Length: 320
Image 1 (spheres, rainbow, N blue to C red):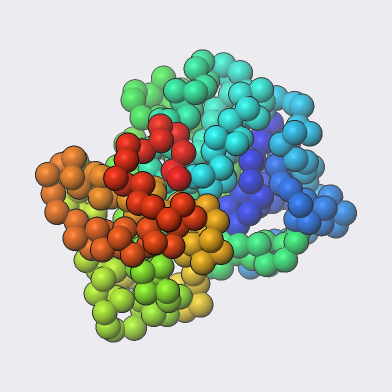
Image 2 (image 1 turned 90 degrees about the vertical axis):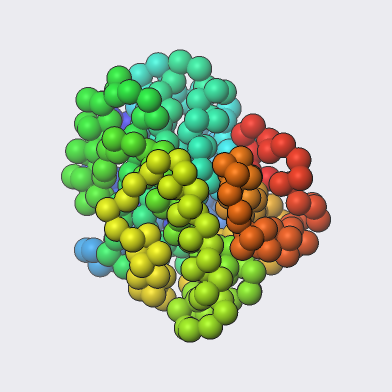
């Protein structure tokens, strides 16, 4: 199968690099100095299960890509989805499987509206990775898992399993979900409280690992999402608060969520999808979410627009 990975950051770079190292036909969409370095020197991956990898992988800008892909991984921020839709449309057909790997809930469902005739799943990823320098990705920890699936039915189950087998052959733990809304929300229950609490107190992960108000705030946010999950009928095999604490405690103390970094830069961020959306969900279900209300009020002041988009209907596709 031919793979197209849109976005060559910590997630997309690792997906594309692992696939290329396993001999798969993959093209990376990147830009700027990162793209220049990949073209010149190859893509370097640090911290993988097999040590340092340097792989030669075709890379180009979105405008330069003219081929067709059997599998498209969308690995951009929520606020960039609109920008890459034309590329997904022209690089796909009725046989293509599009797998969005974003922190924002429901991206695949919204993309499917704009991509009629395509198979667009929803998905999430468990990995800690970042661009450490142009052309280089650093992965922290052993976990590299992609979970994806169809929202309704299993019309493409065989195809999704074939993709999973190829991913596993590239040393990527792939899971075809039987309830992707439930499983994507489980990932959301980690990344959203982590991003919201870290940005609220302007602290790296070490600040949430130590006893004190930031850690208690993180816990309150997880509990609010757990109440939403319960109202939606999602059931998990583990205690999600204990699981969330275990995961953040296992991260490097200097880890900072990307939303927090984006807010400090003053540009676009995933504030809407990670902080304001839980407020909307809670209100729709008749639940209280005081922690997320507090985070929305404070972090809204840092957004590039200087307003709280939760006061208005969310855009049908974009997060911000």
